[in-house]
Every structure is written in C-alpha cells, then in structure tokens.
Length: 258
Ligand SMILES: C[S@@+](CC[C@H](N)C(=O)[O-])C[C@H]1O[C@@H](n2cnc3c(N)ncnc32)[C@H](O)[C@@H]1O
Image 1: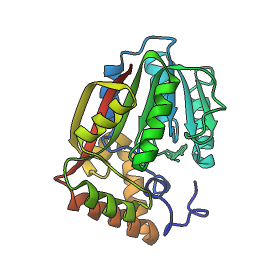
Image 2: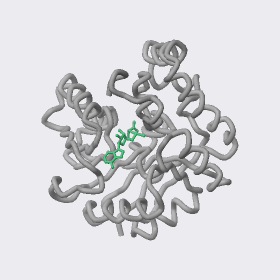
Image 3: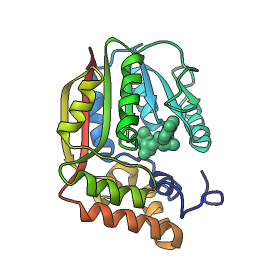
Image 4: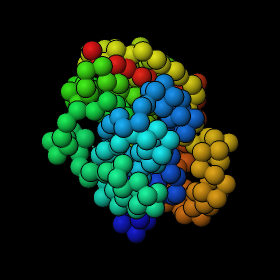
C-alpha cells in the first residue's frame, strides 16, 4: 500500500490512514486490544484466527506475549507483504501465518480455533454481512471457544452516523449501539461474557502518541500536514468523528460459542 498506487479520493479511510503511516487502525487503540487479550485468558499452544490482520501487529503481540499460534486473514496484498515481513523480523514464522484472502471465503483455512479475533472489521459490514460473518465465526470456533471483538460504537443516532461515516470512510461503516452489538452476537449463538465501552481514540492526539510512539506519530502528522490529498481525507474523517464525539466510541466484547 504505497502512495503512488493509492487513489486518495476513492481509497477507504483505513487505507488513507495506513498510507499516512498509522499502524494501529482500531477505534479503541492498543489499550482496548490489551484489555481484550487480558479477558481472553490465552493458554500457550492455543490457536487464534484473526480476521483482517492488516500489518500483523496484533498477531505478533499475541504470539510473543501468550505463545499462541495465530492464523491471520487479510485481503490487501500490500498489508499481507508488510505483515509477513514484520513476522519474519520478529522471528515468529513458526507461530504466525498470514493468509491472503477474503474473510467471507475461508475455505483455504482448515480446522477450528480456540479463539477468533476481529478488530475494526465487523463495523464495515452491512447488517446481512455482519450476520453472515458472525455465523462463520461461530462455525470456526471450537465448542466453548471465544470470539474477541473490538469495534465502533454508536450510542445514539445510528442511522445518521452510518450515513456520514460511510461518506467519508468510503466503506459501508455501520457502528451499532451496545444493545444491538450484543443482540447480533446472541443471534449467532455467541454469548457475550464481557463488554466494555469508552470514547473513540483513533485520531485522538494523546492516544496516538501513546499507541504509535513519538517517531511514528510525528511521521503521521507530518504526512497529514504536507500531503494535500491525505490532509483533505483525514480532516474529513476527523470532522465526522468530532461531530459525533458524544455518540461515537469503541466497544470490546468477549463472547463464548454456545
Ligand atoms: C480497519 S482495518 C483494521 C486492521 C487491524 N485489524 C487493526 O486493528 O489494526 C481493516 C482491515 O481488514 C481488511 N479487510 C477488510 N475487508 C476484508 C475482507 N473482506 N477480507 C479480508 N480482509 C479484509 C482491510 O484490508 C484492513 O487491513
């Protein structure tokens, strides 16, 4: 995913943020991901399927800290190449594998998993897409396996937020309220055991420096300031986040397959 091949007018929000140098593309940032991992209670040798694994940062953190085996699925070839390079650099080729493919078509991946992890991926789907993906997640979990999920929350004004977000992110982004997320999980026989919500952190400056580090956060800001096409898109997205600052947030959920 390089600036030379990306059409900044049409690219999705996460592609623009990634091209500007943002490494973590999830609404609650690293702090929310770490809380999810704590809830999961991974045991060494257990297996994790990660949907939309992007640059492999969550998969690497999981393998390093919890000694689990991770299979990530990612459709963007540039992100797959970057993730594989990151995994090699971390010396984790025996523990982490990235499959290039579509999360709606998981035939290439064999077996069932102790966990499925998905961050900032269900929000992008229509109601039908969400239901389909949640059913597939249930199917891929061993009995009693856990789905750990990190998504966008709309406490109120779901429809208005969907319209504005879909326009600036160029993806059918449909955040739900806490009640509606839990109902969607329940309908797929995923029983929510733990759930937490808080405000959005994706473009929060303080959080960005904490998550990305000084060098990377400064590089991101420099790219936004100096590259007009990136700046236009990031400001558009930021305006919508700001408009709904009282309604938009993140949600993390840990659910057990029934
Ligand atoms: C918003 S980003 C989140 C990335 C990562 N999970 C994180 O939290 O940093 C969504 C990722 O999912 C990938 N993705 C979107 N739709 C996909 C699909 N249908 N199949 C596989 N990957 C997909 C995108 O390419 C992108 O890397």
